[in-house]
Amino acid sequence: MGDVAMAVHPIIALTNAYPDLKVTVLTNSFFSPFFETIPNVTVISLDKKGKHKGFLGLKKLSNEIKSLGIDAIADFHGVLRTNILKNLLRFSNIPFAQIDKGRTEKKALTRSKNKIFKPLKSSHQRYIDVLTTLSFKVELQADDVLPKKKLSTDTQEFISQNTKKWIGIAPFAQHQGKMYPYKKIEAIIEQLDSTNEYDIFLFGGGKKEVSILKKTANAFSNVTNIAGQVSFSEELALISNLDLMLSMDSGNGHLAALFGISVITIWGVTHPYTGFMPFGQSLENSLIPDLEQFPLIPTSIYGNKFPEGYEVAAASIDQNQIIEKITFTLQ
Image (cartoon, rainbow, N blue to C red):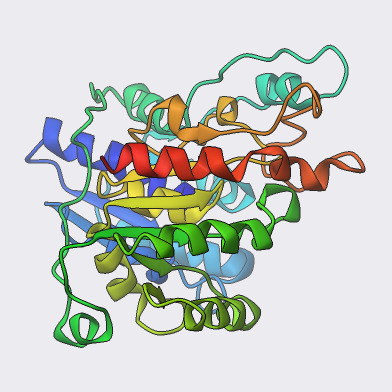
């Protein structure tokens, strides 16, 4: 989800630079709400479990693409499926530019010996580079974000309506090495709740996460669990109205950045130098572990690989530092 969300900003920049250009996005139908308000952008839904499954399905998809009269293809994904599509379309004379994921420099950044610790090109810029290869002159601007969405009546009834600042908290990530200890998250929530200055909304997914977040929300007066309560489109609408999002290095941070919301990111075994920092955020909003205690960070790009003991790296971030960053950002 994060990769698709990060693609939105370059596409906004592209449509701003070329207002007469028709853009067709091939992605999972679940992500179509990302693109629905961008002028001249339509979405083709990839049905990878149905009609587009396997080689024959991709062949059918390549024929669908050719029938649309596409003039150029920008591959932001660079995976086996898009490589197969490229080969299937090789005789169509459609220019096909693919992302350079920077695997060599990412390997140098994450290896344990002879690590080259320096910031790499952002994924947003890598997407822009694909467009440049296709001769589109595009530059990212700070306002290449989506407009705030209007909350539905049902959602407005579901949440409290007052003048408090709205804070989103997304405490989970795909891998343990990217997560802050949940007990410390609850301690942060408790301290924020006690001020009675904020409405706090909890985001997550999956039955286990929903259960945990529901229990937490029930324990505090200014906390609402959103996970499993509203549709994805309504969740996006709520995120677009936040004043701040506290997230791990995970998709929810990128969802908030879609709308230009301030995002404070807690990093574990990954690091903002890998190029996956949410769009438009300052490096000061990235809180990282104690690198003297955990000098091998980043240990991997996606947080799925780390030495023994590094799964608790995020815990070295002082929770008071997180609270101070939140209150300072919301001033």
